[in-house]
Image (cartoon, rainbow, N blue to C red; front, top):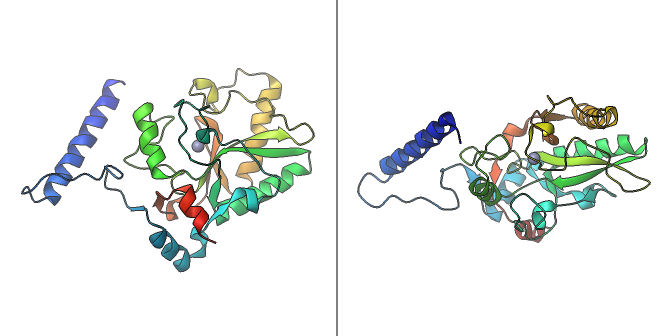
Length: 243
Ligand SMILES: [Zn+2]
């Protein structure tokens, strides 16, 4: 952690403490919700989520396995094979807001014409996951700042790679998923031509179909207009309950 990062975190912590103190009227104890320590606006009940979908159907989270037939999932956070070394999700599920899922469906159809497919590593992530990631790995280049929340928490981001449909093999990319190194960045170009062209293929098909890239992670894409989606902290199990 460099000095600037340290200062930023200290200032953030002080601000939060100050805000909590003001809210508590300096009388009682400072109450910080451990599930929402930064006091963000988060939808964390099924009831609230259902209301938001009733008000605007584009808030619906859809199950990618059902929505995109043939999509390959490798949900690393549902296994111990991820940077935390721990199982974060209780089920290997991938959910996205409907518009993002529509765009991804289009991506898959375009790629299929070239014999390529998509493998999804992560999509919607409950906010609790973002809090935990930051505790394990405090570099906000690679891990979303919990005081803002991640686009994954909004159901508007997807981590993915390309596969060869005939073999199911992943195409060669600059790094494995979640390798937090400079090689994961689009600015890194000291790579074999094949790798560069695979990375470009993914970038092109995603950006032509409604997504924007994240410069430091070749695998991460955000849907355009993502700001309109609320942060969510709803478990996969609860999402399954909605029919
Ligand atoms: Zn991501």
